[in-house]
Image (cartoon, rainbow, N blue to C red):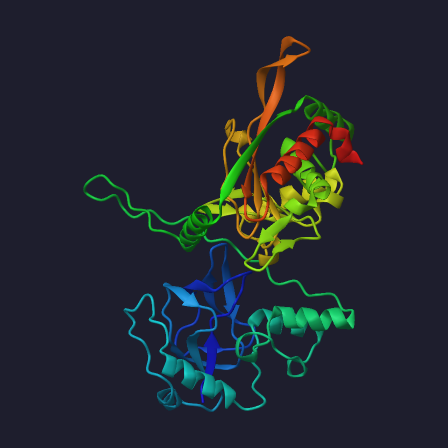
Length: 418
């Protein structure tokens, strides 16, 4: 019986993806660990490795197919000694013209489940990432219980075993983000058609759902940046030439946002139908523009990191995000997001919440404005911070407490050093 290759789950919360490209053709020999296909998710294009030795007997899902569900059949591998006649025992191939394959019927799904259940005991189902992590750690897959679909061994199963043995968790291979979509030649009526990339489609779906389903409300605070700008200048001057860090205003803003979360922890939350989920760790996502879309690398435990360390991490993650070299766990998760358009001269804006988070903080430009101090009009460098809030999880007073804490830290930035 030919071996089945299924669409793996290669990113957090991935339910479907685009099968962008086959790196092998039907009839090619494949070996375990050898790249065989490219899968495009909303955030990245990842190589999928072969799990078995053999020959690529049939490509079930053609290159370019979108909306391919996780764990659906995408190819059949002929094991050693099998000839092409063995493929006749499996469902017939789909027409090459099909771009978006129809979902399997209930009967076909049942038959596939029966084939998996009847597979020989020596056959082990595991994702390519799980196989690589097990191989690097010297683990036997046969001794590991799988908790993925149909008992498939997945990344979390390997991490569980490694955590119990005291061994370090192997890091998955880096991924690359898809390039911006190519432009279709202009039409005769003067309109240029730019096809949607997978990233753009998912961004549209997620943000449409977020704006439609999340009851947003917005809070604004005007922050005096004078002391923070002076602290930044002093610290950068002390670092001298050749220093291993160079603080930006955004670095200090991210740190202030994290410290404000430590003071008002109930904002570090997500809504679910059964409960509000409160996060213990303060993991702050930082929005970074990349070709064709946006990615949000996450600074883990941002409240505990020193300014130099945090600055270097933000810069390094942002650079690798633009170059398409982030790992899925580096842009997945986070309980709060900071997005900054001040560098583009935007005075203020309201951002759409990044689900399942409950808040996103939008930072505008630092601008010299006229303010009243002690009854006199003076010039001051001011910044507008706008907090978008999910009213299901965070009430107005709680959001106001957070924004007040953030403003206090920004205007008394020495607390960033404590």
